[in-house]
Length: 319
Ligand SMILES: Nc1nc2c(ncn2[C@@H]2O[C@H](COP(=O)(O)OP(=O)(O)OP(=O)(O)O)[C@@H](O)[C@H]2O)c(=O)[nH]1
Ligand SMILES: [Mg+2]
Image (cartoon, rainbow, N blue to C red; front, side, top):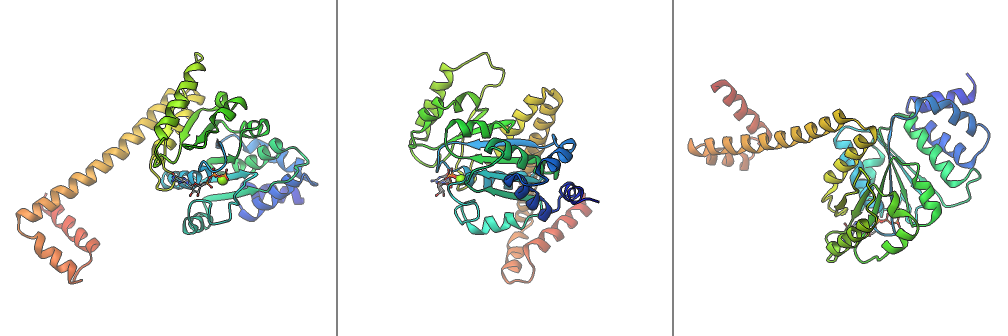
């Protein structure tokens, strides 16, 4: 096997070290870059590529951290590419706090790549595309690409994505600049992050006003989502919209139906949990056994999980 074949095999097998090495080769456009990309090409096209862009400090990296966790919760594998990050991904700033960062970087289902600011011999947009292809071929189901700013080159870079999310935050006032740079036209989803701040609704209305001016007979109407990346508020809804957009792109009615079914199933499961818990606690109270059980837990005679298990077993026997 040649070295290139070995590298390609490693990528397809999802080997982290090989993936990292291949990315370096592609970034520097050194010997073998072209062959690697050519050979993995037949194995690409499965990932949902999502671009996040917007003014510096809007909260893109923090948001990405939360989005990654939401996809992981759904059992999906994720790749992240940060292009020209102004705040380094390896620092504590990314993902809000260090613990979360560590949690993600030791997760085999997540691969994070930061592309340092420098000249890319093959062109920044091209290089980003190839790095994304490596993650796609490696089997990552979701690939998130972050770029900062609103210049023409950022627009080019973010076009590698199938779903483009433009992130704003109240008070940054960079919307106008973004519109000029053509960011508004390419947005599939708008996010007003930092919704914990006052003025968030004003930012939403500003975007709405611009969207109305720009209302082409588009089939997809870009929604405006409010999030608080720090706490994770609004993230499940945002991820739902991203998946909806993917269904829209595929033009698949069944896809959307399944998506709705998944949401309904999660809601049902949540409701069942709530109802069951309430009814069991209520029964215990009526039977006068609640106090006693709580006492035993407080005295550490039994732990809550074992107590719950015991209760459920007892209930099943009765039914
Ligand atoms: N109040 C508030 N602060 C937030 C929220 N999300 C992020 N931040 C803070 O905003 C700052 C910038 O967040 P980042 O995630 O680094 O923003 P970014 O858009 O990736 O920034 P660049 O990569 O430099 O363009 C950090 O101090 C975050 O903690 C939020 O929902 N509410
Ligand atoms: Mg960032």
